[in-house]
Image (cartoon, rainbow, N blue to C red; front, side):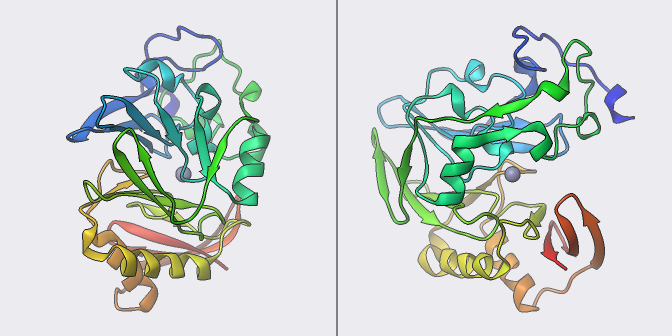
Length: 282
Ligand SMILES: [Zn+2]
């Protein structure tokens, strides 16, 4: 089993299965840091951006399997969430000034948190390292949080000189957003765009909304996007990933393979393309 491959170091806080070496931190551009969780099959990414005044903005908070606050050089002045799935709000309870889209699905999920049995990904076989035997994974849960703020589609937020534009991109979830940073052209996409399997067969997903969101990103941002900072698999993706997703839907990109199957979320048809795939409901 993959679980025997590697054992991570320290586990300084027994609240968490893992210590700080759960994360891998890389500076992907000046003032932009990617926080990767490489020891789990989901390969989640959160990001920080430096503000003009030397502060830090955190985008998403990871899976909650270690204390993400411990690895930040300072507490973030603000934490913005792309959506409320477990693999992005795991550390949300650690921060003040946390915000999510004003959307019923996202806010109620953030309030409720996630019990282990409501999620996928916290079973032992999902890990690429050994889970310390001293930690009982069955006890794992992501606590809900009561105190947070909301933003709206189109909000242009100025955080100590860092400009962030909120673009509501429903599809993967009803209240998913992308954050566009006009000063650098970076687009933080969460699970709306990433170089991997795009999950659109979830109960809360909508394929139609998703395609409209892609069109909207193209028409509103187009060639202003210099880099995509995605929620999974790679810290940076080419802006062309957006056009290639659209081409996959329009049929001008031909799948390399189509696979049908059933997973925890239900029956799907997976259309595979070079570098990404679409998980469509069946
Ligand atoms: Zn995700």
